[in-house]
Image (cartoon, rainbow over the protein chains, first blue to last red):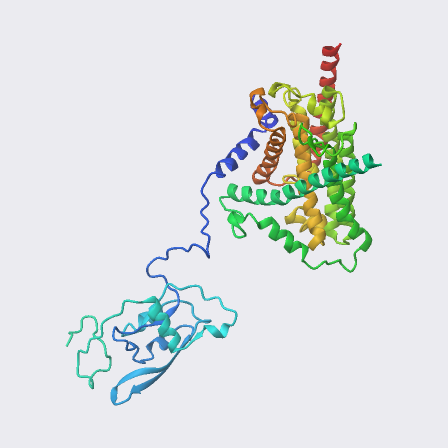
Amino acid sequence: MVRLKRFIQQVLFLEILSGMAATFKHLFVRPITIQYPHEKRVLPNGYRGFIALLRYDDGTEKCVGCDLCEAACPSRVITVISAEVEGQPLKRYAKEYTMDMTRCVFCGLCVEACPVNALGMTKEYEYATYDKRNLKLNKEQLLTLGDRAFPVRETRVEFQHPHAAFFNVAHRGYPAK
Amino acid sequence: MIDIALNLIVVLVTIGVVMVTVLLHVAYLTYFERKILGWMQDRMGPMEVGYHGLLQPIADGLKLFFKEDIVPAQANKIIFTLAPILVLVPALIGFAVIPFGRDSIHIFGLTFRPYVTDINIGILYILAFASIGAYGVLWGGWASNNKYSLLGGLRSAAQVISYELSLGLAIVGVLLMAGSLSLVKITEAQGGGLLHWFILPQFVAFVIYLISAIAETNRLPFDLPEAESELVAGFFTEYSGMRFAFFFLAEYANMILVSCIATILFLGGWHAPFEALGFIPPVLWFVVKVYFFLFFYIWIRGTLPRLRYDQLMMFGWKVMIPLALANILVTSAVLYFVRV
């Protein structure tokens, strides 16, 4: 009986027909394709894309040239050359700040390490280029990237005497002024 | 003298129209196939060139046309060059006897018929040329001087021979019922609606024909001659550019040809299924039926995996041919008793 049933199934191509029914059903399933260059995914918050330098609302750079990001970076992307602010011997800034993005692994440790929140991770991921030297970003490029990706800036708070502060920023949990 | 010249013009124009239409359909069949396969796999298919990728076949054609033409150093150059032509010409020449519609068109006192010619051995002519196409594949495989190509060519030869038998035998039932080898006469014998189509009395032959036709055109699940995962691309591994395009065109032209024959033999050609639907032009009915078969082939391709070689041969020789022979026996016996 079972053999007869199998024989009939084979003669009528029942298994092939059920397979064809499955493929036919999928003709009407909406494709999940995203037409990439034309439509883009909405990225989640906390996406780790290109790294950018940020500014305060009055346009001054946040970075104080402390080198902690360079120390934290596992793949030695960041090079900081620190310098004194002229006439304010206790204040420092980054004279040069280069990021070799060809080596970056987008771990975000530099952003974690920054004591003044001068670094931010943007949602930019389209950095294909014909010349990989273009991926070695200097301070200007990093700042423009930050201006583009973070239009809302943090307000700058002077909480101590200008000559007494190492960090020119209000820390979280630190009394303002 | 003027009569001959006018006749020549009529024939040439008909041939031109048929060729251009067929090649256009061949080009867009590739688009059709990619779209449907895409949808079946929850993808979109070509979307970039033109609206929803409508210009994709043109872009592909241009690309193939401008590609470098490479002939392998160790290849037999004459046969290597001849093989694509030998594959493409038989595929296109078969369309000469296909009746696409019912009505002739009269312009300037000239009569344009809906077929190039109506010879009384139409179906035999197509089968003969289909067999010649197998030589092209075999030559292409041999002349490339490449083990994968040779294996593909050999497989193709074995497969085409095995399945051409059952294909030819499946057709015999229809020929017995129609009483003619001419495709026009076969179409006319099926007039008068759905119930007169040969698909009903010849259903077994229809199924055998469908299966053998897939094997004849080397398409999935019988695409062993070009099995990518085993033979790179089979007999056209070494071909590129325009020569590759010839093989490609031939494959799709063969698909359309086989669908046209299936339409004429089993689905009543240009006849409408019901008398009430007779107001729709016969050519349209023909095209709709042909596209039904083309869709079916793509559907099969989207569903089934490739057969193993021994399964293919066993199925061809032990199942299809006995069935086709039995079908001929039953058909001829019934016809003998009905007609007498």
